[in-house]
Image (cartoon, rainbow, N blue to C red; front, side):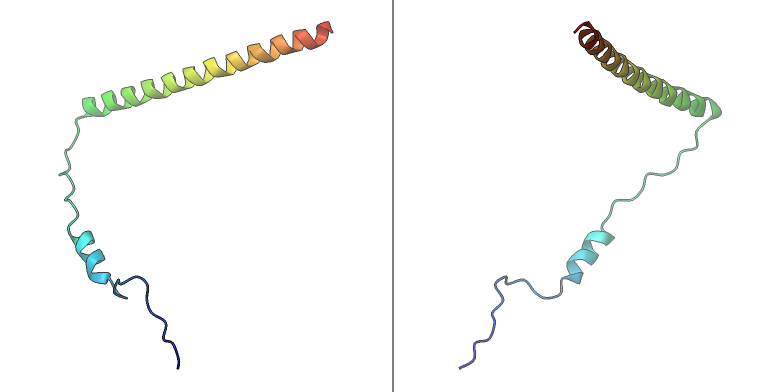
Length: 79
């Protein structure tokens, strides 16, 4: 008496048709809209403003950390 292994999951061995259907039903890309030089410049300004704001926040955090280290240094030097 030999036991044949049974598959626990009842899924078919090949499921390529399901993945093919998913990839073929992707949404279409939006049509390309040419930007005017003014629109390009405005988008660059917005991007630059965001970068500056992010770097200012990083600078604030670095200054806070430096202040904490200086306070710790004063405490260590006083003992």
